[in-house]
Image (cartoon, rainbow, N blue to C red; front, top):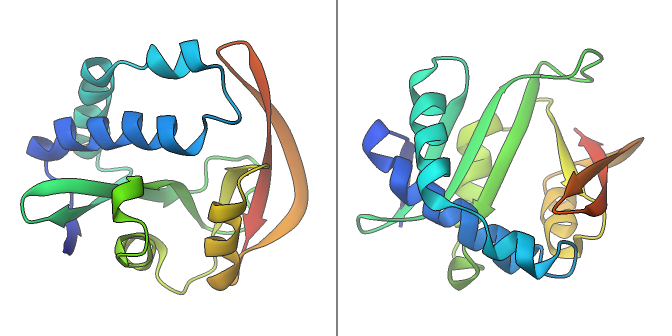
Length: 158
């Protein structure tokens, strides 16, 4: 397993992981119909744009040549950012849990620096991972809508 900066040619693999990881991680939070409707082709186009934008840093975890995880980070997108760096997303497919891919992706995306992220509130596996990396809830909460379901999202900072 290795981690490197993403290339435009990784967009399809990132999109596939994005969809699969959401289906695996959020089945208890989001409607099944919404999760099954996620479109990898549409996400692939979006990822090509993000990789090329020179604003967001994107990293991939690879098992051989296969993308098994990704992370993205950049300058905080919130008007009241608690840190200069935001972990915008990090996902690893369930088959790669425990492989170290998530840790290597986090290290590549934000290192040990001050950072923040938004996480679905009822996501104990993710929260345990973030706590091991010194992220703590800071009291900020918002509600996002996914496929008609309201999901509470909490901010964690380090």
